[in-house]
Picture 1 (tube, rainbow, N blue to C red):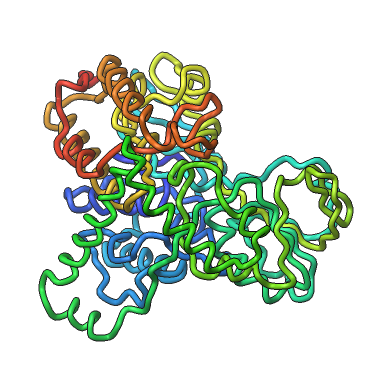
Picture 2 (picture 1 turned 60 degrees about the vertical axis):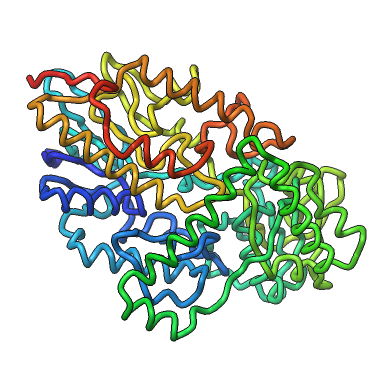
Length: 491
């Protein structure tokens, strides 16, 4: 007989979102919760992405929990290993491991209107039942591997950056790297000195700014340890410096012109070959795609064994890659730096709500619809963390996560305080939120910047980014408005 576990709250995932939610539940005095994690350790993105050079592009003193600051960050922009270590320390500090069920992959979830409970099915056949379901799965967890003709017949190693194969020795190999996004600009400089030849296939060049990274001096660490409030003051300074960038992204693109000039200067000083420099110059407005930061990517392209190929890949053959111009280049290894399935990642959801409503089917048909990126009409007691339209292009998503875990905690307390069985956002409230957010996104750089990015769904609608200042999101989520929700009586 399959195992059945009953609890009060089910949290899915142990990245920043899932761990943050678990900590909030513990601070609320709850023990009736479980966290389901498909892997054998916590960490989410920062556990899974182990490619060479993996690091954060937001300063670590801000890309961390405000209630659990770390005075010992070694660099301004920390590496994957250091962030993963931080998340594991936080997990242990709050005693979360006793609530985490490792090796449990969620296969689907079904709302039972009679029981007013979520039934969560797992890949192992076990069932978890709870009043509340909180999905902290994030957007960057399903690797996007393009369906290239001939790829299945390629005999050599072929892997995505998020599934890095550390058993593959790249020394002297002919390596084809497909993609020039946020991951590729980090690992290409690390593997270029090893490869015999590296062909970098680029469809669209990114805007790249210098990365203001530096070791954190010992005196600063000592200050953060010994002077109350010093680290919080530094964190606040970082927050407001980054927050100012929202103006350029949201209806004031002229403010990005200075940054564009700075990025062009960075390119010109790094790449002396005029032809190569032209290939690396974007033809769209900065901010339309994710703005990247790096100091070593451009210098890596100056190496004699590195060759930039524009136009993308047409097919893969038994020992080569063919570009869209028909040129064939030998390859021993293929590495994909092609990002993740973001908006279409929700197609994999197997969530059935009230009256048998299929969430993935509804979102495919009508577009992704939520209230504040967290709750969905027709799906009582279900909450998303870092869900649709709460991603950022200018500041730390951990700030958004903290706003959301506080809000979800408030929703659970509101339900229980009123002795209700469930809470569900009103359809009209959700509709107004969607109309407002899409109206504001219409003037954003992601819509007007002249590019196609992973921020947009298949219909060209931005379902990813929060348009505007994060402090406005904080204000909107600081307290839950009972009028926005219907409280369903207990059974």
